[in-house]
Amino acid sequence: MTLSRISIIFQKELIDTLRDRRTLIFMLLVPIVAIPLLLIGLTSLMVSQLSGLEAETAEVVVVGKEYLPNGLLSKLAENTELTIRGVEVSRYNELLDSLRAGAFEALLNIPEGFAGKLEQEQSSSIAIHVDQAEVKSEVAVARIQDALSRYKDELVSDRLLKRGIPGGVLIPFEVNVTNVATPRKMAGREFGAFLPYLIIIMCFMGAMYPAIDLAAGEKERGTLETLLVSPATREEIVLGKYLVIVLAGLVTAFLSMGSLGISLGYVIDASVPGAENIMSVRIDPSSAIVSLLTMLPLAGFFAGVLISVSVFARSFKEAQSYVTALNMAVILPAFVSMLPGVDPNYLTALIPVVNASLILRDAVSGTTEWPYVGLALIANSVLAFLTLRFAMSWFRRESIVFRM
Image (cartoon, rainbow, N blue to C red; front, side, top):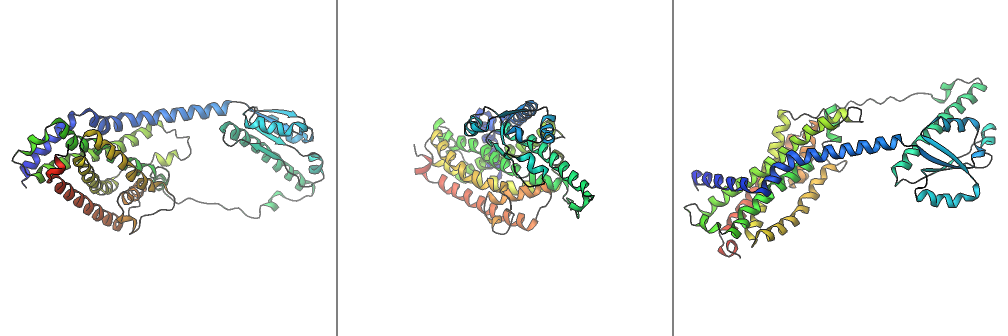
């Protein structure tokens, strides 16, 4: 093999790839345009929906309203976002059906003699019925529980005051928990779980269409035969195509990562819980090196598998069907980064996709463990080499190349 021939084939295939609209859509348009628009759109929609729910008045139906003490009733009435409506006890079962149908947001069942038991300092209970499948219902219950909690605290304070007992007797000591994790490490938990999944999936998708077009697509266009009669060997042809596919996958992956990082800076409100952690994400030189070392052999592995499938297929459509089925083999192991309690070890470092998912997650939080990175690099490089050799051997078989 000569480097000059491989370079010529690489340039030729890269130009052909950049002329293909489907490849450009997945490699450039989706990461740069679609991801920010989707993120901004979903975030705006979520914020507007939550703001609307917070502003709405929730209707609360109370069975046995007459049994409520005046203090508790006033606490519930203080919340202007709650509308309290009392009903007869006989309609209890009917009201449960109405709650499920969404006629109101919450149902309180006050037992008979509730106020009297509180006056006698006896224990009692209140039943709250909620439709947890409805967000409005959960918001209403949170408001009710806040009112009940405030009333309960006042009731306890009054009882202690009557007996001349200081309120601190109920709090023998306090526990103060201090989080020593850096904002970046917290970001690895909150944001780093999703980022590896996105990078790996986008890397596979970015390599998918170039791989299909550069083998099965050339079969359909009838240009593969012209390439085969050139002075370049089969290995040189495959290697030139292979490098273009690897480049397409890496460009798509890192454009997606950069696009997502920039978009988050614009759409995340600092008032959102955990926002300060997510906004502290920084891709420093160390993280960039780890990401590149992790994704480069993985992209090579994807490219070797994809070009082998594409060479085997009779047509672009057939290759697309095969590759679509392969998506699940990538999506499921990439999802590992979102599973709690799963950390890199010597076993996971040997499993392709899984090792990249876990290493990238830790790289975001700045907790890179280089022994696992090195082992994963070796494992994925071996797989990339083997799949490339398989693609070359596949390409040398006339029965496969001209399988029409």
